[in-house]
Length: 342
Image 1 (cartoon, rainbow, N blue to C red):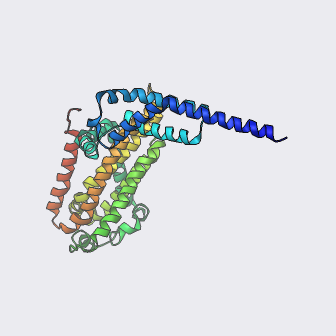
Image 2: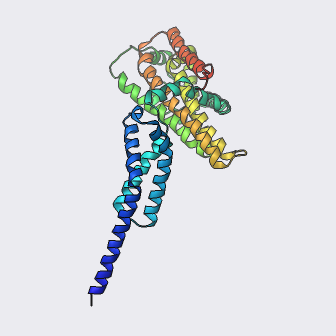
């Protein structure tokens, strides 16, 4: 009674195996050839390939896609499908992927790609700069009118003795304390983490039409304005600005760029123009991502200046020279460097 069904099942399996073997025999030559080409290119041996192999790669890739499609539709064995999928993925990156070394990418990025991306968001830079200036003025004015605002605007870890009512001597000691190298590495790492968090949030919040980004920029600068009032009230404005400038020019410029990148994405989402929302977001996202890569580099520089140079340099004049010399270098790089596209 069970012989017939078993025989039918065996026949079905045998037919499937035969179909799979015939499919493999008909196309395996192309698979072996494209796998050899891919392997040679992955190992950097392109010069060993013949001109015919290089020219045949796109055709072989299309045939490989066709083979994979047929294998899936015909429900051929899973091992064959997995092999074709792996081979197709490897071929895709060689046919359509960007083949460049890390060094070449760095030369392209820092040699003009980053500066072009920054110039492309100049409108957003002006908007972000305006809100940052407003934030600093608001923070200064609020504390000048009511000193209770200071504790609401300035995080406690930054306040210590730098609070309203502190004596000139106490405030001056925070600006020109004895330079110590021990622990500066930890301090630099902490400040870099804080600044990076503000910059990344300013960028990430841009998706909500840029409104949270604007609020974060205003709040961050309001804290700075509040702290500025404390030192200004004791006649230490120049000294405080010099103390801040040695690292703050780079740090604040990085936060400005991050905020502008977030606003650029928000503007693309809210006002895509003639393009679709997806097309506008795609273009804005690529530009903003380049800017943010530069922001990370700037924050690393700011962290080093903040943790080391600011503590070791005790001259206000030298602090101004370093801070605004570095700022000038950044601005020249972003807006004066205009290499021709390769």
